[in-house]
Image (cartoon, rainbow, N blue to C red; front, top):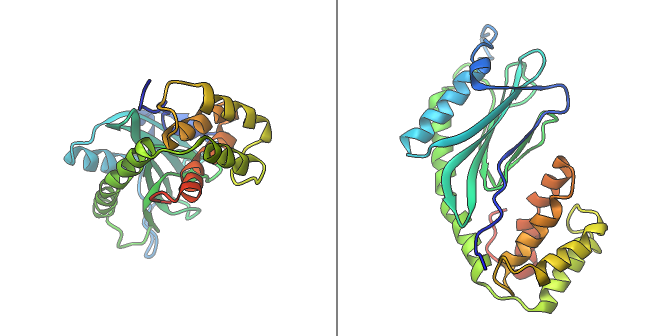
Length: 250
């Protein structure tokens, strides 16, 4: 019997015309000229600023992935961090645009998805900034990473609460019913029996705990395509917090 989650890496989905590239290829894409009101930032500068700032705080990136639009103006990326707890791994999502179509943004969580259709999800998003002429990328990222790091502990505390708080079988059944029949989660009802069997029959997690129910939902949602999977999975935390009156970070 385990208390650890089924680890899921951050997801980068490119299906709206963007192409996936590595960091070396990203470095070849230059930023356009600045104007009096708009300061484009080379995508690699954003990436390097995030990695450097994380490194100063002893947080190593163990996996990273990027995608850019066909014209090179928009960049999307995900980074999995060495920082880990209860089998979960913290991840960072980032995006940057040099055509004013979206703001520079970072998000952090143990479930992160970035998509070239502008979907951008994590547990906490500390940076959302326009490319003004006065913007300092190092200062901006440093403040953002500091805020992210402060939110690591609330995430850990939430998972600990889920792992140690008992629930009855009827409470679990009502939560599953509410998720699918009352449509409180964006998931097809065909997955309801799968979640039910995972919760009551899968012994990988301690019985009668919110943590086991959370992992039953997460495991069942892996049958979905990537975007519906993430959309459903991203709402599990808030849904369970409502069901069981738990501490919420959502």
